[in-house]
Length: 523
Image 1 (cartoon, rainbow, N blue to C red):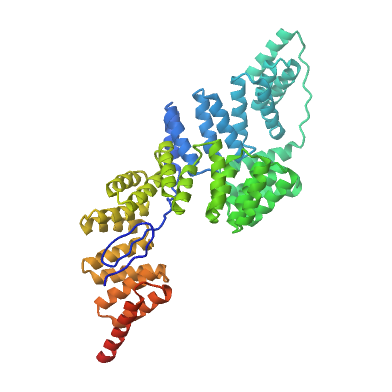
Image 2 (image 1 turned 120 degrees about the vertical axis):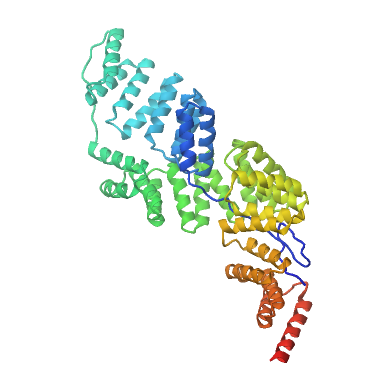
């Protein structure tokens, strides 16, 4: 009788050993290095590389508005106007008052000679930044090009009121007077509640710098004095979310939505707050409401599918992701998620097709490679699995599951046990609490007659998953070989308690009786 492993996706065959593997999580990496590489590529005018890197950052950090904004800047520099517009719009979906994105979006529309769109953009900015000379100048330029000369004249003059040494505004104002023969009247614009707006802009700047602690009192003061100030309510919610104060943040998102029912970002953040607070059903409700308001809002549809997936509502998850793929076939990791959903439903051919398409669309996405390797292992295509896992390990060198699967493949390829043990050691170095890796290493130690080491691994794995029947059985086998009959009896009894319908139940019961009789004789 040898040790046994629980059956899941991958099977081993060490005597009576049954094998398994856990679905792992791709670790989240800090963005600093990748962001630095993207910026260096942009600075060196290597726009193609910068675009690729910023897209990777967006996939990894889908709620960080700075990355689609930076992508928009790169597209703008590269003259890819439609892509720049899409990137800035994505930024504004995440943060509706990301003024730099509005400013650049307006500049793109000016470049495209779409004056009406540019006017709309800069007029919106000035609702919140009424003392911004750059926004006034750009609005004046759009009015000028659109033939709205009176409005252009007033806007140029407002620039000079705010910044008397603005030579471009002065020059264009003179040119406008020469073209139209008009005089240069003084602009008479009223700036409402400038102090309130200045405080909001100060808080906004602090949040852009991720200085949440400093921004919070400014925003709390603003919403106390001006409870109907929509964007201050929203920004305070975002600040509280960043500080982990999700219950308080939720209150401000609710207030934002009450003041502006079509505030897309507030709906989205409200849903995420409910998720953080352990109320996924409320999150699903909010996301469905959001998509009724804005059906083409892909971040919301993605999170809806993700939550259905994580809530084990697979049919709705698939339907939601299929809707999303009809709008954008390359969106984030949706192809991969569809593959995994089919994989979990034992629909292997569909899963394989989605994983392969995911790799074609995103060649640097490691999870698709190692999920494909599991299918290859199931089909006993070990050489193919080895190639897929080698690629995955290059892309994700700190993912313990990849090394666990490499150990599994090398065992099936009848490689020396030392090779598999090396990979298992690496997996456990990354994640010391990886129970499947501990279990498999214990089995390999047992096969090499290193029974004491095997018992230690089984014991540690059981400290993490005490109700795992296969580990209880394996530990019992190791204890028998170590001559520790009392401990073996306890482990075997636990095995039968956790797996009462075990195929070897009678054999284990007989062994327990023999161990008890042996203990009485020795006693």
